[in-house]
Image (cartoon, rainbow, N blue to C red):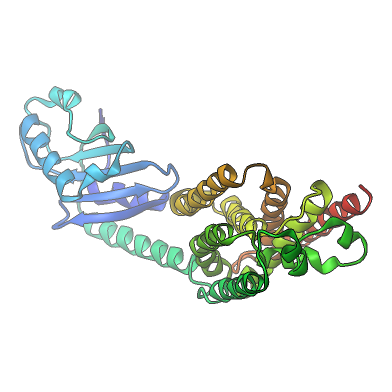
Length: 352
């Protein structure tokens, strides 16, 4: 069970491999590190001068309490113990702890510690650099356009409700809902306007809550111009998919919202570890809201628009690229795919 290496040297190599420092107990007594690549694994590094396993166990429990590791739930916790050999070393293998996390305990023998100060500086400097890069990743824009879109959608909804009822098909048609025969006659703008119109206030509220949940994140990640491009063009592709596969009158921002999910999935393709750590909750909100909406609206839910928006958002994210991307050949490929998909969907709708 004994492994070579010293406290800060091992921490430095862990940070170098993708770990992120979550907390330190000074003076260099314990450190908690999150493994960004594993996604559900924490490393707890502890220095101890105890001679007996039960005393080490008490110290580990105290450190766990200081870091509030009960919040980890059922994540994995890898505890690394540094110090002299114990009188009853073999008992370390039988220790258990009052946390839900799956605990693995390793013993490390430390050799020459003369470079520990240097490795501490290197580890903390690298961790600070990584966190600065992480912050930058979500700082390419301020969430402004998302609120403008919400306001515009509200104004359209208020006008429609003031002059009729959005539960009335005639009002929906008047305010720009997707109506296949009218698109066939040349009213192509009905592929754009449906994303600003909703069928009832509940439909409006649940979609605006989803936009409020997802929109600021995507706008910060991609910047405002890219965000607006993804939202609008994913909404158009969603309407075109509905035109191709659904005869029903339809309206709503769901397709554009699924486009934002597609943009997040594109980000996950580019940076999987960060995606798994940071973007799960907003996606669960989005998916949960749409599952709930499916129960309420039943067969009237436009699944083809949702699928089209999801794929369209993914493709449009590839077209505009992340702000720090420099590869142009992939953007060209995604542009060809997006144009091809939209053209094919429109052709299918027109010739159905």
